[in-house]
Length: 110
Length: 116
Figure (cartoon, rainbow over the protein chains, first blue to last red):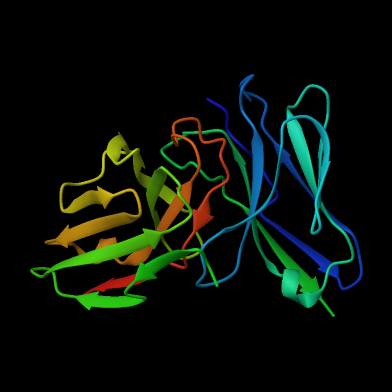
């Protein structure tokens, strides 16, 4: 079963580009990679999803190498409001019943 | 504003009470989910409904009883809860059957439940 590993926390500054990498060595052939953002006392919000290579939308880019064993969420020119927890989700990575990985706490500094 | 509406936003109940959490979506999604989230932890999947039928039950204690009256509504009935059940309960919906986990999920903002 695919299990995801992300950095526990990251700090960055306003205006910088932030890259958060998720490793998923056991990703299955039909699994997509999905990223969510969660603010305190709110539900997670879908950011971006991809299967391979690169996906870009109005808020982020997702880079997936050919072996698909990792993925990188790229947030361009972050602001204070990007401070949140970011989760990488791969299909149903049902390890210990936790579908979501532990997430990355991103703290943006002024 | 979210497209998945959960009520109530906050709920305080005693261990002998019976209460229900409600979730509603009008996006035409046929998969609906209940998650439990403790502070500073990721959401934990509890149940998945696919086309109004329970398709995944992650060994949740019977004091939590889900119900899907129709394709837009999802309830979670609570009875004889324990203090450790205090958490944020999140509802989500997605297109597709919900079996693969590949469809993006739309979450409500949850019900903050406190058990006295």
